[in-house]
Image (tube, rainbow, N blue to C red; front, top):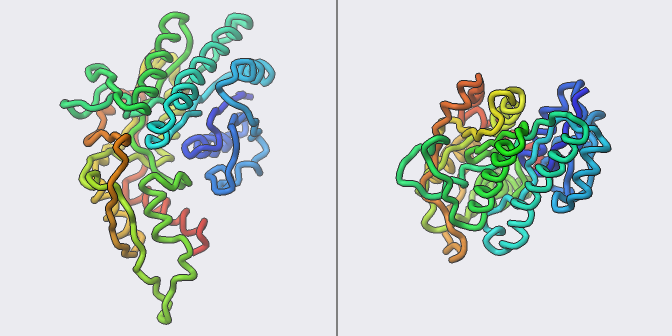
Length: 338
């Protein structure tokens, strides 16, 4: 039996990771979360019904709690995804963002280090960083070995800090720590300020109440986007591919320890192109409206990754952007009962 701790287990990627790992009956999963919302991926995937999934409410900011969990449940593997993940919120709440993203990571690493020394047990740890850690760069794509981490805004700098700290623990203490730097990940997600959830909610929320006499959906809905970002460039991963990449890093820990790995699909689109793809696959039309974004909301204009390194481990994306969006749209339609 492989005892696995997933922090941030009720979050977007964390829930999809728990769902994937729970399909292996040899895995016993302990999901750590601060809370669970009614509208959440964890509930949508019905993860509480899975016999090998155990949800624990707690906070990565509490070192004693983390140490107790790892010791009590004899944890073999840690996937650390708990964080403040929303860029806009991070800009408004820097102290809590650094507390969760940086000190929470230190608590995971330190508790694991101490317990590993006491038990002479090697625990594998995957730390979730982000492509945002690179910050603005004049040279694209970002490459792990040649692009410096230069996260400038609050969120990006917090992810760069935990990235460096994680690899320092591997270097100093010979710990089995690896780091993932995924591109923008999409799928069934209930963070309504993010792009894909925003489009989905605009298209499908209360859809059954918005049909005309011909049973067609009225197309008077407005998608509100931040002015200036419509032509920004991003790389987009379907969440199931991101989850498989995280598992690949842990399964190859002898090779990946102490290193960071980009996780990207190779699908590089502007915001405009992604919106058009979504609406085309969903076969719906909406009106676009642009608002001035907050002065503290700083965005990187262009981001995409060189993923040669992780592909050498045997991982590659299984979904095209069309396949990923089709599944995502179907999932949202089911959620909104369309």
